[in-house]
Image (cartoon, rainbow, N blue to C red; front, side, top):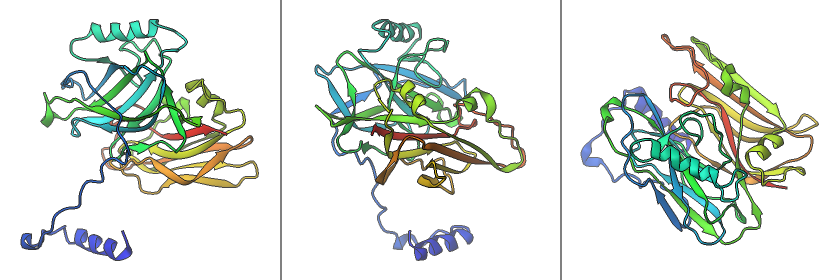
Length: 343
């Protein structure tokens, strides 16, 4: 918006957002929609699922068999939430046919699915089953959060998917009492190519101690900040063993993720001489507008660099509760999610 447009909307809001003359109304702007250039495969939940309305947050994983007969590369992704009133996020995970644990992983997925009524199984955080004691060898393909849109991956890059693999969709339902007993049948759309110049990966950056309970946000504090700064390569390689990041990596896109208390966030590369290259900075966080920002010029991370992530929170309202890390909408998070390729 230009300054004049901002002034018009600000003045309108200050006067209580009065309704205009219906006779002067014009058609609304079309939805921005997906920017995915081509849809080659669409995968949906096997059947409609009714979230468990007895709990405020329902985490459900749905294993989807990959039927492609030849190796290919995922080069674009879009998620289509079936019920936007309930779906908090959709994450797509790849369990590759050549995973280190072999066929036992697929047997376990089938068992978790069979053990519960209806499609899918209960999961939390990632695609591991309800007990959470078995961590699957997985790679994140991409994710959807409110406001996000479909996108092509950077030109010449993609994520390999082999015949016999499984894609696990984790859908987090933040249940609304007014929407009880409502079905959902979310889906994802993929763009595929036979080959790429370089393999890429989505790599989340955070301080793992936060997920273990160290990110406590006290009540009645309006500017509470957490941050982490380190070399993330060993962490990225742990999540994506196929990546070789000894020489460093290139950052093509980035998004930040917080929940409703989020105030501001930033992600930067800190160089050995103390200088900084900003990747993304959001001075006024909005939970309903979480975009994956494509960098106009990719940023290189080289030996000696560190990756810095900072999030601030506003928990200053009267009646606010002490909050910590968690998957629920009323919990909090601080994650920077990058799309990277090796240097």
